Image (tube, rainbow, N blue to C red; front, side, top):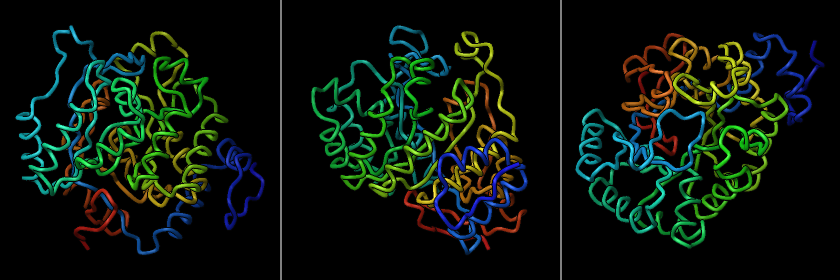
Length: 356
């Protein structure tokens, strides 16, 4: 049985942990939904029409939880040409898309000049498309490979047309967990530093969490606290997105057979906790891509106010076995079905079109 918790004040880690471990699921959902209504009183649920473009699958980081990456000499390793990228953007524009989520593997040889040329090419040819691109680990490695600072990487990419950066690579912001599941990846403090530097330069970002590997409940709360603390400082996170580890085809489940597939109950429970705890992050996305459309819809009753992307193309999660899809019309119906008002947004969460 949980202690009585007042929702008119900021939740402590201890209170959030108590709720996570002891609250009844429906009670937790009700609390999170009330918090959502405080932040979004008009009952509007948003989505964005975009496309993931993975410019390369070549990566030296070798995360055990990833089934997407390849090494340079692998037969199916690639770097997309400008022509291939342009074609993907043209297809996105044809369905009314406004954003590309642009990221790849961490390529061992590409320097800042290559990334500048690429961003400039896209921005000049398609100024109407928002480039939401490059994870913290990519930015950190570009800096090291190019022998410049993280700040300079961000300044130079912003000057060429980079608009915002995704929260990918956060996984769990606990170095104990990171050392186990992705030992070559940047540590917690570097991930936070990249986002802080971006925020200082006026580049907004998102925060993410991938749970369901080797983390404890306490480490999940540490992760949420790290996001909340940085948001207090910079107000630079536009949204928080969390999803469960997708283990099919990955080395991690072979190395750690104790890792279990995460239940829908667990997803909704954690989502509700995130909505209650992250009182300074206005938007929380539903991860229908990993959870499926039904639980994606349920998430809207557990604190999420955004369905994320129509996901015209998704390769990384699909490589690990999750292959859910949904188009704009399906999203609109799914939102209406629970009595909320659907609206298409852009990267900055500005409403472009309503459907009510």
